[in-house]
Length: 237
Image (cartoon, rainbow, N blue to C red):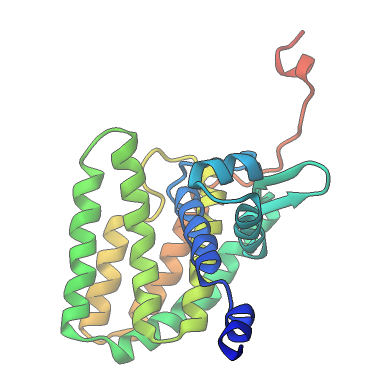
């Protein structure tokens, strides 16, 4: 009887794993810009795609909404978030405040093997930049974000690591909407300069380079307000 009671009270681990799997997959698609801002994410479609119930699909979409990656609208459903220009500015302002601190913590803990891992990420990023096609472009975007996420992991602060997960994903949304450059907004050479400064223990320069790097990403965005128009105006009828 006790075992039955315990089974009844135990959390549904499979449900938790399912929700996390869906959340991670959709988040990756947003980061890699395979899912565009404003894309509708119906519970039925998400459930069918991942072969799970609407309940699990709803839970995953709700989790993404808490991170600011999905917007859930009453009577309309869920959509990939569509950040305003002001939201985009706030995202990069937050990164300029947060990432130098993460970099300092990471530099205090970093090992030679972790330095080598970061350099390997740069090699992969550079290889992807030399290739063509949408698949290579998406992989390059992910590799670029992985550099920042790896530094957060090295810092040893799990809270900041989760925060950076959100900031990198929301940055990707803003870049997808407002980016002007066809090349990666997250400068490959700037990543290398940051690693070099960390390696020679010049933390002030490393933090300066990080702030400059994030400002460079934001400078590539056209954050002017966009005036919405109707169907007739769009086609100049």
